[in-house]
Image (cartoon, rainbow, N blue to C red; front, side, top):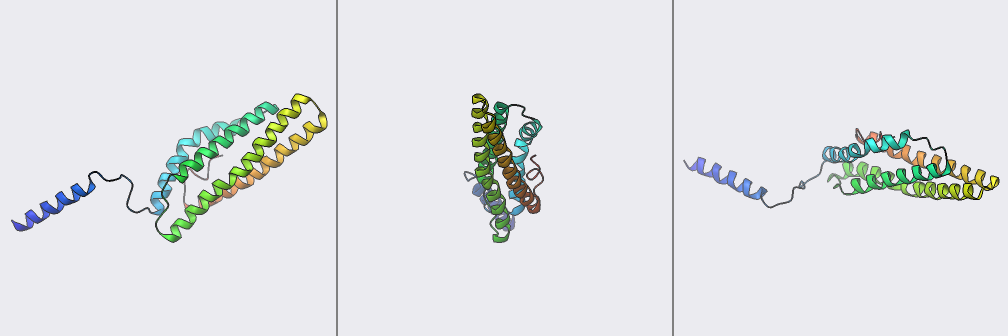
Length: 168
């Protein structure tokens, strides 16, 4: 009888301990971080696919595509930053490296946005030399972004993500 009472008391204590608390886990593992990160990436994957399927033909379309891409990466970065990092130091370092790699795309995307706006302005003026220089600046900025994106993708795949790392 005492054993049953003790088990019932322990069960009641465990139930009460779970009430009124946070839904956030007390500890975060690499596996949990990967699952939560992949949820963020999965929610954005269709939008990334649509953005990647565009083929801008005009300076204005190029600027619009650059803005969409920058906004998507900003949303990805914010979503990943909202996830608690793994508690284990070794597991945390890979997560931190991936989030930092996503953050490093910010400067390349800002350069892409700026060069795309310059491309639009050059097209409006109609000066061939400026248009050529601005177009080359867009290509350079896009190449720099792609390199940063490839680095982030590689880190995501190495860490164990399924959706993250495949957002082309």
